[in-house]
Length: 162
Image (cartoon, rainbow, N blue to C red; front, side, top):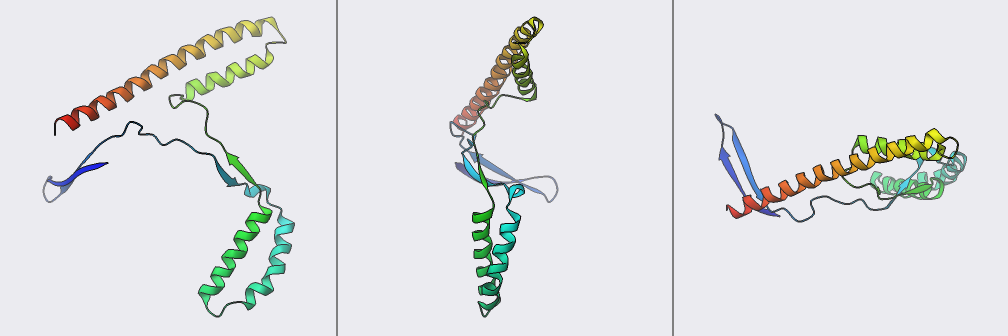
């Protein structure tokens, strides 16, 4: 939430803007599930025949450009709903502190876990990689929580100094 805003004189004829804001508890926006069109799987022949059927209706309707454009948009959205499949983007289950290293180790552990039934050496490699993954998770979790607590403390200090 914005607390105050003021101009500050800078160098020469430049001015700066000083914004004071209050931080909320959660400063990250969480992902939500949503429908996303999968355009590369579009049913092209059905789409073409649909447009051919609607062309005469679209061309004859409307006396001005705005009406023709509105009608065209309705036809396009109708065609997208009919011929373009959709998929659901789900929330990423990984915590926010996962970086490239942790994700890479996670993939390696998954791969070796799929192979572990085949050979004895894969089981040893699985144990080693699992320990390495857990250590990386702990390290990055502590680092992330430390940064978050520092940010929170800094925000607390600036709000008490006013």
